[in-house]
Image 1 (cartoon, rainbow, N blue to C red):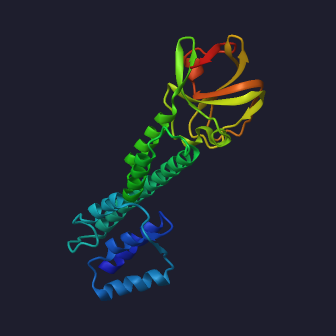
Image 2: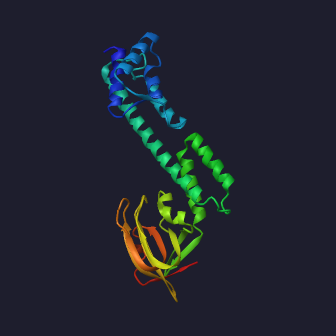
Image 3: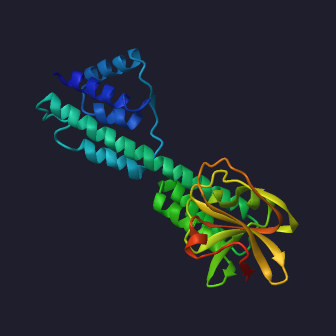
Length: 278
């Protein structure tokens, strides 16, 4: 099998796993072809209606592709011995492209969550906004998932200043004061530590309804009502799952507390228990 055929097969194999070919992938396939050979591949791509798109991931992930391309058994190296090596290249490229797509998706998702949190708490003077924005911009420019996640955790930690204490256990709570906070709820977080939660206070006791929305992890939902002794647990929704379309309601509710799924059973929190907001 000649080099042109090897590259065509490798591209077709790659296209069978994804809808388009990245510009960087195209360049890696053809980087040491002669101008005549490259023209043949280019014409074939146009005639075959194979779409080529710009690579949308950062340099950090593009380097992974380049590292694979340097392997001496790949079809765009001069030392090629058999078509088996071309398919080995294709498998390697498919694997790394899938990894790139996955990482890029996670980064974009985390970035959107941080942006939502920044908008929701833009008026909070206790947050070092200069540092937050510098970290955020640097993470975006470098497509640095670790830094974005760290920013997400740091930003979340700065919000957990209130404690909701039961007999024997207390949760650090992020308070949803505004209507925007209440609407988004835990959707701005990708996870929740075991000892943390979100508290939703209401101006007066009322009939309130809650649903999962886009919350990405299981939670317990506690409906609390005012008493002379403190807040009493009036209703518990145990281990509500992501994607659930249920709506849970309770009368005479002054606060709602959301914590990690399974926490109520783990800490033996039950109906009628009293808690105090510290």
